[in-house]
Structure formats: C-alpha cells, structure tokens
Image (cartoon, rainbow, N blue to C red):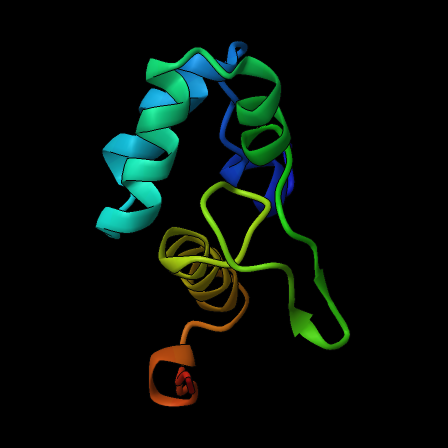
Length: 107
C-alpha cells in the first residue's frame, strides 16, 4: 500500500512548455503568471526548466527561496499548494485537526 505522501504525488509534465501551461492555469497572481507566459511564448526552454522542474524544499526554517515565478520560487501558487498539501497531511494524520490547527502569514 502506498504511503499518504506517495499517493498524493502529482505526476510532472515532461516538457517545459507543458509545465508552463499547467503553471499558468493554476497561478492566481497576474505578475508571476505573465512572467511564465512570456517565457513560454518566447520558447525560453532553459529558463522555464530552471523555474518549473523542481520545487522549493520545506526545511526546519520553513519554506524559503527567492521571490519570483515558478515552482522553485516563493510566490502565491507555491504558498497555496504547500498549504493545501500540509493541510491534507495533517488531516490524514489527525481526524480532529480542523479544530487544532491555525494557518497564518505575514508580509
């Protein structure tokens, strides 16, 4: 039986253009969405690969990275996806988690 984290894994698109289209469809932030869209229109495959082929790592200091567009930069989409994933994990581990967990942010 697959672990919770394995079953929650999302298969990654194989090309930078497909990854860019996926990112554009999910990103709620116009600025970062437009940055990826412009790179894909200009076929900047190396740049897209750098931004979309890996993710920021959650470490002991939390989620840290340079601000910008892409899955391995700090931006609205990465925060939304990280919060969603962490919420699902906590709910899986503790059925009463909804009454025990608070999520917040600062600027």
